[in-house]
Amino acid sequence: MSDNWPTVDLYFTEQGEGFPLIIIHGLFGSADNWRTLAKKFAENYKVYCVDLRNHGRSPHVESMNYHAMAADLEQFMVAQQIEQAHIIGHSMGGKVAMQLALNHPERIAKLIVADIAPVTYEHGHDDVIAAFYAVRAAGGVASRKEGDVLMSEYVKELGVRQFLMTNLEKKETGKLEWRVGLDQIRDDYESVVQAPAGTPFNGKALFIRGGHSHYVLDSYWPQIEALFPQAQLSTIDGAGHWLHAEKPLDFFDTVSQFLAD
Image (cartoon, rainbow, N blue to C red; front, side, top):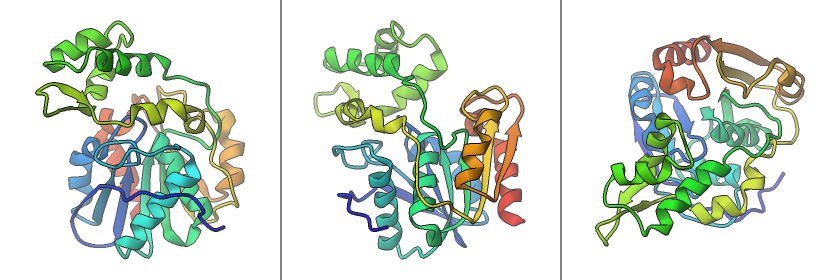
């Protein structure tokens, strides 16, 4: 298929030498979240961590459509002269990785999808988005502690609030404000929950789920197999949705073995 979607130039970091490995963060994440694991993978690969549109240091634009975000990634590969790469995508980033594999299978050597499936999910971030807007309504905050207080009314889990606050940065006003494209994400959140779709990807694919997570249920396996016939499944016991942060060594070992096979 042709990519008739307006694209943006994605911010990225790179380190290491060897075969390219591209890492894609999830919703409200950024390349920064993968710094520690990227350094470890860079011992064997040339690792690129990208910021998706409306995230991190990448531009804010309309649409969170997976075809558009996959086109951003394909354009990034062209610009960096990466003919083919291993791709790791977590959560929303996993859906972007899947869509790229479905649209441009020739670009993918091996596909690793972390705790997400090619299914349409229920809306699940209303409280998070409300917390973001509470900080914006206050005109920003003087400290992360102040932001935490505002957000705690909407998001009860401290760990989730701390993750979300990685998106705060100091502006010229001296206040901490959001760097995510909040309006764009909110306005097209319907696209974020959608499933990737297209011609099945016949290359090697590994789906990794957290044992405590509900994002990749056994009942989703037919949908996974329909689009990714060679898919394998691995479960990291004791991990939730943020499996790469909760069990980084287990995640690293699982991915490394799959890439080395």
